[in-house]
Length: 262
Length: 262
Image (cartoon, rainbow over all chains, first blue to last red; front, side, top):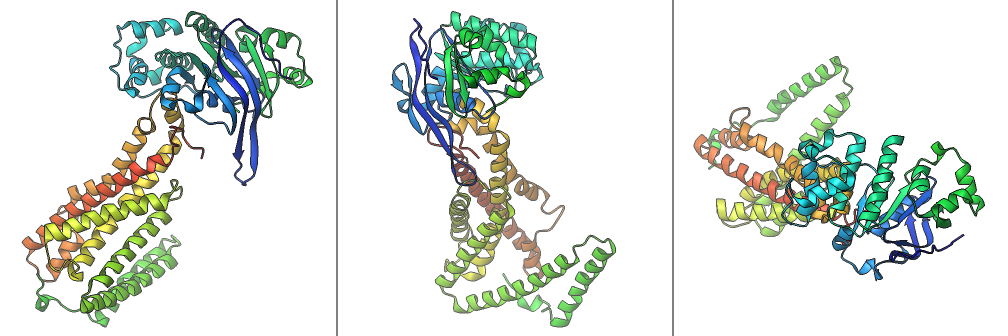
């Protein structure tokens, strides 16, 4: 069941009949995603939810061209992303991967990495740029000199988020950001994402198995099953009154069975 | 440089006496129950027949003294280098034979050409008495470097997938994201050659030098040859491995700076 959402915010990412087909090790063709159509808007959080193997992670990887679709079009601000230089696209569409990876060095050096990749002079610890992202993710400036790999899981996830934000992206993608976090850390992250979304006027797309995020911060919710959108709409309404048997069944399962990285 | 009157020509009885040491090794292997007796016997037999065959082949090449058979011999050696390098590696990079084959031909061929014609400067250029042993040493050592570079690059690219995708997501190019993997693979390929140079003359006397000394060459001249050939080997390993890692890392990515799926 596809119900395109209605919202006053500007559309930024538009999927139209997107499909992904891959060859299995046995040489047969496998459909990973099929006829995916939805719109993510500025200032809104789009949640993608589904069981293991439903194609959630593949879907989000298409947005910054870590993978390319086999069919359909994806547009960013009305432009087909296949025509955008991937290096330029990835500065506009930042991604936080499931496992927070810390490069060798301090927290500051990790935040400077995106500048070095672009061959720009990295901002100093005292710069407004660093202060801005630290403030957004609520990390104290005293931590800048600490070895990034010695930080806790929750802190590393915040560094990951801050590092993605230094490029001033228009869209922020998050792949299972709470998979390694406990409930209090998840709640803190949810509140941070909500703040970032509104203060930076970003479009956030988050893949999650965690109903907490879906319930608390997601505006537009998409439920995927076996690579197809089974239901989409306003998050709180969908969770309160599921419109499809598929989504009802998914919600009825114990949460531990929904943990996944598809 | 040869003074054949100083050489004691080993006869069959002397060779059989030398093989008594293989029998001793077999006895010790059996005593320790390492289970490699058959392998030891088989390898010693292979060595016997391969070296006798090469001896007659070289004898024939020296007698013919024509460029075509010498070039064919060199190409065969390059082919075996590639085949052995490939058979040693468990996990091969994409397009392994094309990458490693072209690197061995350009790297070893270029260094051999420079060393034989410009450094040693003998005439005619195809003189098999010089070209074949010198090229043999260069190809043999470069093959080891090639194996190490290719194998390490594959394993680094596999183990660093998360790091590479994280860097790509932050706007890095393929080259930037694979920088650490490339550096480690190149370092691993050069390390044995660097160690050999440092240990030469202290830990072990190299085969070429000892062979020349046994043939009656003045040690000072033999040492000069040894120094020169070690420089050539280092150059061949450096160029071949450089070409492998530079060509090789690209095979793991698409043109859109996407890491290919394994």
